[in-house]
Amino acid sequence: MKYLAICFFALLMGGCASTTNQQTGGAFEQADYYQKLLHQAQVAYQSQDFTTAMLLMEQVVANDPSAERWLQLGSLAHKAGNASRAQLSFANALKLKPDWPLAYEQIGLLYFDHAMHDPAVKNLEHAVSLDASLYRAWNALGIIADLGGRFDDAEQAYQQAILARPD
Image (cartoon, rainbow, N blue to C red; front, side, top):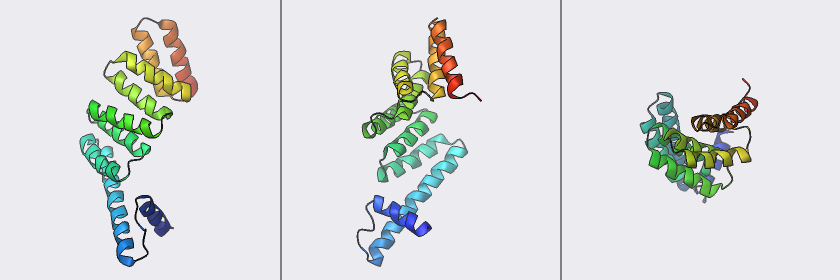
């Protein structure tokens, strides 16, 4: 089963095009290399070394520029304090998946963390219009409404956050 998963991963990366041992082995080595990078990024993240995790994830994204990898890179860049890299990564994720609520939530939270409330609201509202279960988006919308003195809107957003995640 592990062999099939590695071969499938290698096929996605453009390897395994030939059945020769040399080319197949190279694809496996490349797949193994990027799996190791991904693992190292996860270890760095768990150690709260977000800059190292981000740099490792950049190498993974260079090999696998999927929307999911771009979102991961953006989240790591956000945690590492690299707002411009995070914004670019989230934008790249949205180019690949234009209606992905999680990407809109993440870019909205990035703007929220930098007190850029207008673009935060725009992205967070779009995120919850696509997926009402995004409790962090609802919570941030509540805080922004609270700060703006729109207490009824804040209460409504907080209620939506509670409904989305009652625990």
